[in-house]
Image 1 (tube, rainbow, N blue to C red):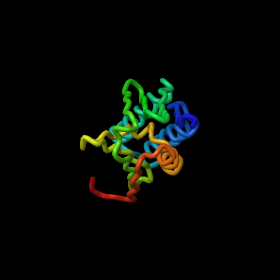
Image 2: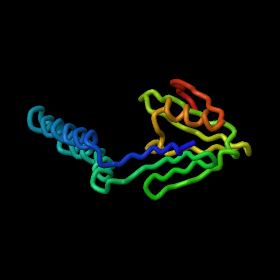
Image 3: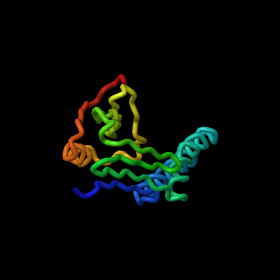
Image 4: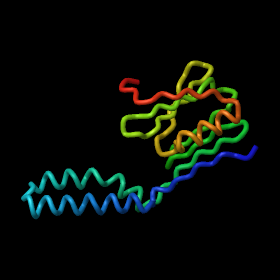
Amino acid sequence: MSDYIYQRSGRRPVTLITLVTIWILLAVAMVRFDASVWVVWIGALATLPALYDLVTARVSLLRLTDAVLNWQSGKRNGSVTLQDIKTVRLDTRLDLSIKATLVLHTGSRLRLPLDVVPPAQAFEDALRARGVAVERHHFRLVG
């Protein structure tokens, strides 16, 4: 079976559009609605992580082979053999993002970084094709 690979770069058009839109709204709030400068600066500071991702083009990668699950998110990376995984838990959060947690046979849990988690259905299908149990949970407020 071929490897399942999910790769995403921080340099995406949607990131640029979002940043420019926020900056325009902050400028309009300052000029048109006489917003306080410190309020605008706090709003601008909140956009710095997205700006950093845009400038550095940080790559996030998840590779699922028949034996191993590898991931890389910036300088963070990890690897787990599929035989060590008891189940993969996919939780849909209120913002519709997916949180993926690897539950190991030892009882420990590994949470995948959010930027390496692929679309839920494709990831679930790839895991099930390799014999890994998957649990889906939607909109949990706790945990």
